[in-house]
Length: 335
Image (cartoon, rainbow, N blue to C red; front, side):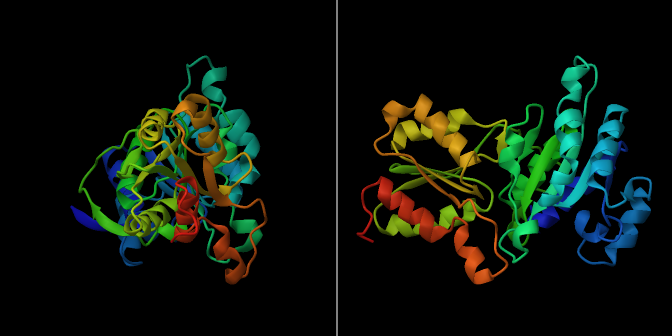
């Protein structure tokens, strides 16, 4: 085991994958200049080592054109390579929507299964850092609506490494949404290659009174809330789905069947978000288990302001998650 940061774990997964399979390549905006971060190096001095190890044919800068990056990756994947595309800000995905929706997502189906698309698209969600409206989106819900794409949203260094290794080895296109506010999170991570399967949720904490399904950066906030609530006599179970497509419905439904209550914490916007989908499925399939209405703790449907004072309270945090739990357990106002 080695203590790694979230970003370091991503870099380690990419480096190990490139060492294991010469078909794995990385390209994107300024990846050569930032290779020490992209590849998990500890300093800029590592940059030369990585470039020398893999060469400029496997770590390559691209023009600042997301449509070109995504289209090139799709073609490269269908002809035998396994690209990892670093698209930087998640809001940059919008510029390549035609490629994502009409080419990447549909090609395997349109070719009757004769083509595979083993490609990973990484993007960082820079919310919570005063990057304002153009750079602070959390757009994974809209891609959940596109058949053919797999979606991961790791919330820990271990999951970041294990899920990414699985994604790189897949023959389907994967979109990785990484919350940059988690980049500095550190924990012990298994050395060497390991894989975490898609569609298998992580039970972060067990409890009996209420289930919290927490997504991405809402996971550590939910853990903080659960610790506070424990002192109030409320036992909270926290489930991190890890992947949004495919989604581990069985774990969530079994948890709600035991606790009878559900709070969904999701840093994306409220309308048509991941939290809305989780709430709808649980209401359809576990209604008889519910002892209280489902509650969502999300970001409101608003553009993100530049001001830190205005921005930070918008996202789910320990206070808002704890209050939602108190409401569904009927203890609101007693804390």
